[in-house]
Length: 300
Image (cartoon, rainbow, N blue to C red; front, side, top):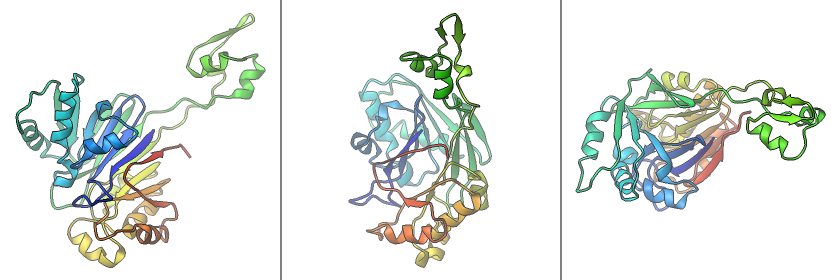
C-alpha cells in the first residue's frame, strides 16, 4: 500500500504545489482521493498512471478538489479506456458529476457510475472497505477511511528451511503454492505466521477539527489531514472550515493514529518547516507532505 501526494496546495495551486489530489495504490487497483485541477499532469510526473485509477473519492465540490475530473475523464477516453470508473462523494455528487460528464465535445467511451455517500455510510469493495464521516466545511463534505482486508501472515524462513525448502520453492510458497519435498507436501499455511490486520488510511479533505473525523481516524495506520494555516491564523481558518497544523496534530494524537501527514497548505506558506514544527510539538510523528512524494505504508 503506497500513497502518492499529487497535489498539496490549499484553495489554489502555486508554483510549488498543485491542487488537492492523492493516489492510493492498493496494488490490485489505484484509487484517487480528490482530483483538483492539474491532477492528470501531476500523474505524468509521478510514479503512477492515471489509467490505473479504478475509483475516485471526492470529499466535496470546491474547485480545488474536483476541477481536474473533466480533464482526467476525457484523457482516459483519448487513451482508449474501456474499464468502468466509479466516483464516490457527498450528497450532491450525482448532480455535479453528471454536469462534468456533459462538459465540452467528447465521447464517453467507458461506463461511469456515480455513488453519493452520506456521512456514516460504508461501501465494501474488492479487498477493502471505505467508510465516511461528516467534515466541518461550508458545503456538503465527507472524510474517507480506507480499510484494507486482513493480510496473510509473515513468511517464516527458518521454519521453511527446517522443512527442507530450498531455492525456487521459497518463492512458490510465498506466492501461495504448495510444494513437494521428498515424500511430503508443504503448504503455504505451514510456513506462514498468523494473519495480520489490514492497514488503514484516513483522509479529512477540508475540515475544521471535528469529533467525527477523530472517531473515523481512531487507531488508523495513516491519517492525512488538512493543515491550511499555522496556529497564528487558527481562528480564521476554523471560521472557513479549515484546520491549523497544530489542530491536525492534536486530532492525530487523540485518535492514536500511527502516523500523520499534513496537506492543503495556504499559499502564504512558502516554507513548510514552521508548520511541521508546530505539529511535531503536539504529535512528534507529524510530517508535511510535498507534491509527488511517495510514502509506503507499512504495518507497525
